[in-house]
Image 1: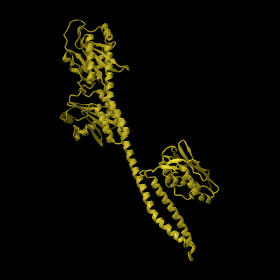
Image 2: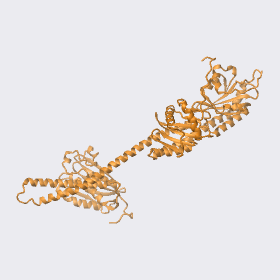
Image 3: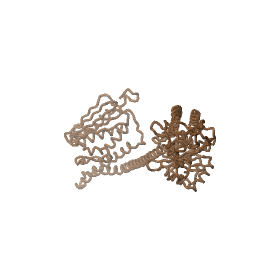
Image 4: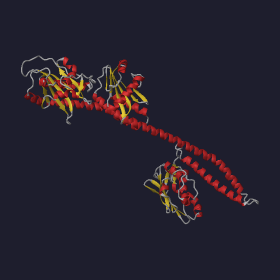
Length: 607
């Protein structure tokens, strides 16, 4: 571009976007103090926004016409070419009009107003197009603001010594400009960050997406000074705050805004819809701008801000903030904080969806488990009667074994029927027990129970079976009661299963050692055998329903594969745990640990 070419005035960006009114007023007071101390008629403070736009936030002057630029914005790179043309003294740079190139002037002309000044013939007279500017940077070296001084009372250009003195005398005031800017940006972030933290906390405690959006919307509504606020998750749900608010849109317009929100997410911008202009998305159709403005007016809104919500590269929804007519304009710092909220809310939505899916999966598993438990219970009850009939007739036929004429083959079949019926009866009993102890709706009627008495009774009953298999059964029980709170029948089945399994899987000449004691507030029951042992692979599935060992020798022993399943469920239902130690070919030790109340507790009776 040659110096003779002109730059077309660009479309004005969103105006009045920086800071709350109180912060702007504070900067105006600082600007007024700076101009009076420096001896100038005008002091203007132009603040850098997070979108790299420069906005005139405060213009202190007695000339109303010079305040026309207040609230106006310009690109950062529009001013830099002109500022670089002058000599810098401290923070200040003076650019005489004769040093201004046509290219630099073309860049700044759309964004400046040249104040009227009385002409002077003095060689150092101030020219209306002269520029005196201070560049303010923060501790990291990032430009935060320009401070302009114009129309000196002396009507003279500043000398080098003048600039040195101004840099010294105005240093505190210029530093206060940066302090005010940083304080406002921090406060704006805190206002919306508070709502964002509430959103994240709510995601951790609420499974439902609608409940999450309800709480999140309430927090953001309070934090964002919105007259109305809507949280829209694309294709799923729309939550309004207050609940009776009217959304100023129709389906076609809503679809267009949703598409705009997706584009804004990819560019990390917010969309601002004003009465006469739209900022943040140039692709919003011209045909929609008029209807948007009409609907804003119809609902008493001055601006609508659309904050995209997403996670990663995916736009998930949007937060629509409606500002009432007369409200301070939506600020750029609020936009930055709102985008952070959009990220936080996006993550919370993903977490809520995952939690909801987990909840639905858990409910489905619970329904399947209930169905399975019901099916097992029904089958067990239905099988019990016909098995009883078969067992009764087998017993009757067995009484006829001595009748003449009954062939030997019939006696063999009768014996097989009797054994099979006994196994079916055992299986049905185990199924009914499994159904009973596995029902979470069935309350545990816990009473004080002496485990020592149960162990003694079980050992007495199992002695005959141990003698028949030539297995020595040893029992070690303390003389004082070992009390637990539980169901005596269920706990009896635990001891019975452990002892009968130990005997059944022991070879002739083996030994089963049963011991009971108390340790660290727990009752400890151990059942050790010298039998077949269990491989590491089998131990992983040992308590699974209907699991039978992969050991060929173990499969030859009778069993339903339900005893240990029932045992673990009973133990866990009583708040305990079961442990197993085993080595193939050496033997196994099962250890049951149950909470044991203090015998001095009044709930525990004496035996």
